[in-house]
Length: 267
Ligand SMILES: [Zn+2]
Image (cartoon, rainbow, N blue to C red):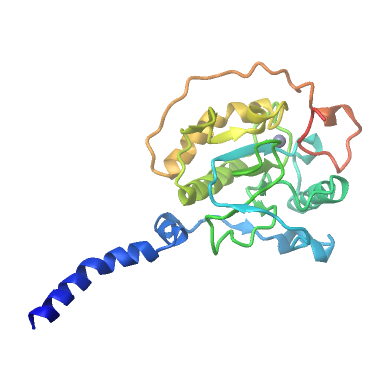
């Protein structure tokens, strides 16, 4: 009887240890994953007449779990501003065509695109977005900074104006959702770059426009509020870059539906 009692006590002690050892990283992270209250428009809903065989890209994409930053972009064409919701979808398709057909990338470069109504379009194909949300697809949006980052593109040109309140709010909810999953804080820095950074923080470009770049301290605060993190008020840091930045080549050419955020302006 004493032996049975001892075995029972040992089993009670070691069972939680086995449960911890057998729990995967993703299962642990599930404790902090909140269901998004925002809707992500799936690729099928904006795909339209693009090649059906590329809805799921035929070329392999890479996925990572150790995410460090969100990188904010604008799509960089003045004619992207003031779109109707139908035009927004057409612009998203035109960006896909430019990235895949012209640039010959595996898929659209951004992880997400946001229109002025606050609609969030799923960009690069990521089958894990909801089922295994700690895995992010690696996009093509910031040279040398694609791996481990999430690229969010605001549809429009934001050197002299901000995106709409609906668009900013959607971005902040989207970032809070992903930061909660990856256990990141908006006020931390990694490699001296804030975790919510802009394209111009990492590459020589005017993207995402001066007004949107200046908004980043407010965006970090709003994401912190959503995450229930203490607010840090940052001193204003005016960016001395002119509007537009000289390396924004698309501003010097005839407007076409193919205009885009200057991803590689120095090439
Ligand atoms: Zn950009």
